Image (cartoon, rainbow, N blue to C red; front, top):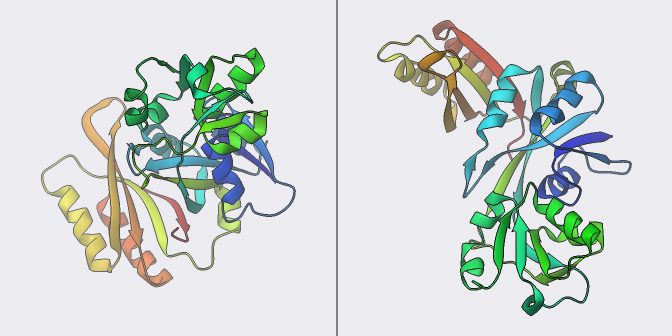
Length: 276
């Protein structure tokens, strides 16, 4: 099974892909990509079987770009998983923290390790394109004065060493990931025990229309667990709304879709899957 991710091998997305229900087992091949649009382009073109992308972090919030891509492209959410995020200072084997003069990582990872970085003002902080990529870079360059902040998997992947484990500010740091397939493939491999559904909808731009849409979901008996809005390109101050709902039966989900469909000018089911 070929699964595309955004980022390098050894990243959190790599870890999420390995642990994701639906990908476990032998023969998993991870295909690293530079940007998320490239990840999903490979899915749509059939170059990979699936993709694993983050949709939300418990500290940083939603990944807005991925909502836009889910609406735009013919892909479906098939599974979701939660990954506990641990940030580690990683350097070349044998290096001590006292030798480190520069630390690199993705800006989001750096923002989640502020206490550690503040405690070491002698270390220059440098944003980098990827957590695991920082480790790959320092190992390729043989930089003993440079460290990366990345998952432990990155150290194993590139032959590096964890200098300081668990430098994140908050232990309760989780990222929710989606397993995405081409739209037709997702329909063929629907999860039989699905109890969660992600939707995108647009409504008329007049007072009360959003309230009416949410009331229809409530009357159908589904439980709204998340709502997100994104701008409609070319239509200032108009929005597409993204919601996650939980349901007890398939009939309840169908009732909710029918009720929402009567009210909205656009409705897309992004996926039905088992909640993590």
